[in-house]
Length: 180
Image 1: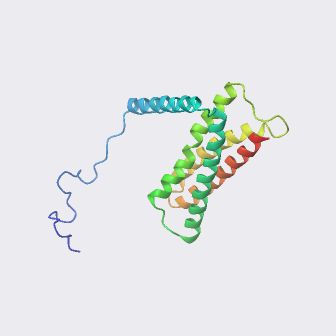
Image 2: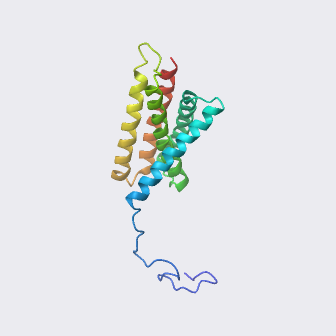
Image 3: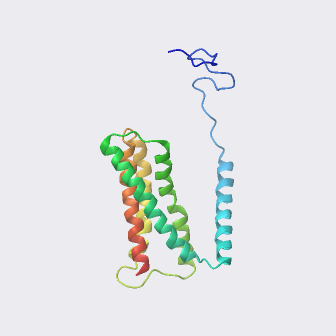
């Protein structure tokens, strides 16, 4: 196959300014990751504080985020399971959507812990305690998904689709049990 016009680099050779073949990017240093995580926590706390100034409570954020999590994971589940069933290749946008659905549980759990520490409890009754079990179930589901993501690398649509389906159900059930 001929090289495109204007490309003077022979096929198989790296172009000017590109890394040599087989070269990998260096790992990100641990202290940079720690600084980025601490900055993200600080930024999240400032956003919650500013929303409190206009009358948005932590409970409101917790409820709204539960709906967003259920929707994002629901869309990712349908997309992933259809791709698995039909044999469609996954695009990078799908993987970003699925992982976003997984990682949205981090601030959701942080808001839930903040509510619990502040004295707010799930509604009393036979299903109030279940609300907390769904938080633990989400953490376990994400951990299992992360494990099988590498173990079943040849079937990513199945893994992401099933885990996103599970997480969408967990988020929907947690929302229902948290409202009484």
